[in-house]
Image: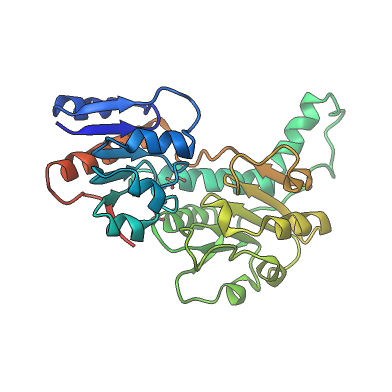
Length: 307
Ligand code: GLV
Ligand code: GLV
């Protein structure tokens, strides 16, 4: 019997399979993530950890968890885990790819459409009682057909966004590893981010990248806030160089209420809901549990991640 610590309650029946397999499963019931100190105390006796993208797993935490053998991250992105440190400590790490691809790609399109057609401003206009008349010149946006979309990251989610965008008639260009982002941005109307956060991609969308785009473009980010220099994004929104930024992710999350980014015009910001569908979140739980059951049984995780 292994002790499994789960840092947050998860949807669906998956955790029951750990119990059925005879493991001692401790699910934290609190709605907020554990502090670093609480997480250290939680893993002190744990054989396995099921954590979210908010739980930082670094050398200090791993050193405090002498029995730990397996970590299942309830996400596709694993930038919260120091993978090299996990390998040094002999801890296997897995994630939940594929099952959230469609949910996240759908949200990227929702953000793009909301920004292109000014949905937040138009909706607020109705609710504020400011809407007086059908207006030939009100809320004019742009159509997706013929617009050029640059997708940073040619992985599963990036390709799924490309498929959707092509169906809308957009011209799609992918920027993968080794491709030059600035060249690709030279004629892009929209930049959508689908790359993992790594040492190479951190702040890759900086002032120079935004300046490489033609004026009036839209930035969509459903990947990680750390990919973006938020000061540069706020500046580009204030100057009008970006006509909108639609962000499901920020750095940090949540943004403090007085963060200058929140004061920028034409910003849409969501509380990191890319994978938030019933189907995706239950399937993510299935994969996280399958990773732990495999590792605790002495087998390779079906969805492993390595440095
Ligand atoms: C969510 O952001 C994930 O990486 O799954
Ligand atoms: C994640 O699923 C990715 O490769 O984009």
